[in-house]
Image (cartoon, rainbow, N blue to C red; front, side, top):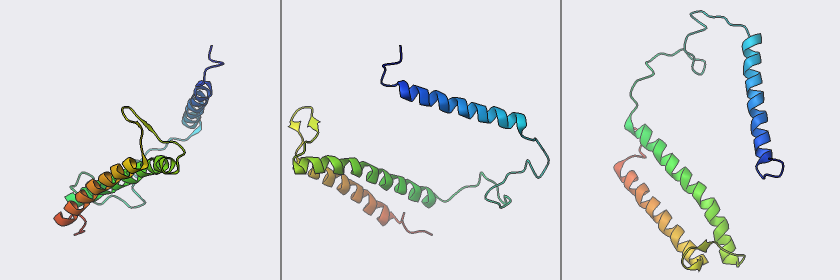
Length: 136
């Protein structure tokens, strides 16, 4: 039934991974030793005993910088596939087909990326002006 199906290798690999993970977990539980105590059950983080409460508040700029990093990281991740499609369209090797107007031209792709980058730059200038990049 699944012999000719294109996803058969994926199913075999997935079942092998699940079987190996379950076997490792069961064997480590059966063979491993279990010691408990005050030192063994204490929280551990990077080799340093915890000094403060883990639920303390962080300053908002920490989160803003983290979100800005994610935003620009996602921008770069979107630029790689766009660059491949743009290169194909610019060299005449074929481009993506749009639903209404046929193949997208290199000019259209370039303008759309310029608008995308311009919107991101407006957001960056706004955050820069608000002091989000000034670490206090």
